[in-house]
Length: 235
Image 1: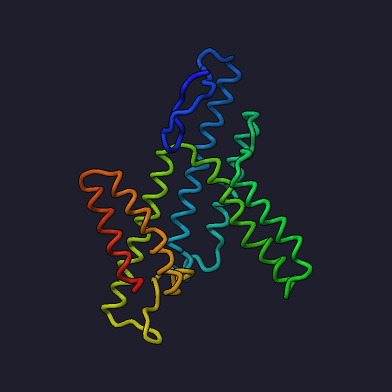
Image 2: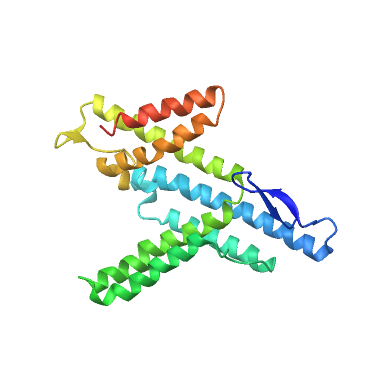
């Protein structure tokens, strides 16, 4: 039993440290395959996050139309992740509290579906939107297993929302209003609704402040400037 640092917050905990160098060759190969598969799966989650904010189908409707680019990325990412775990003979999904809570939400949704105002709509939402969220959530829980990956994904989200905020401010100063409010971001989707756009920007405010307090130099100034700019379109 040795003291080891946690993967995300570097908190010292007591646990068993596995020496992979002295492990059998087959075990080492499985660990290498799993690590490579996790890296590709994380790249898929990273790309999906970028597509979620950029929304290329709305930006280039004449080129992409209704082509399900984001859905294909999610399916390929899930296949790569589960395939690497099965090849490495490792646990497919971690037994985390977060996954248990999501599973509980799904069970409650199924139990209350017969008494819903529209059981068919509830079923469609559960099998479509909620299922997509469940897959991405499970992938993130199992793939964001170190501080570097978490930081890189947060920085991507912050940069994307920073650009959305700049676009919203440009719409305001350009006089592009609908019923007295800005029309929302040019990418459309949920960001095309000014209320949802403001909610997204406000949600990232504490994250940007926390990163500013834990960063140095120009990164700190950039995070603070982002926090200020995100608040302008939400008022």
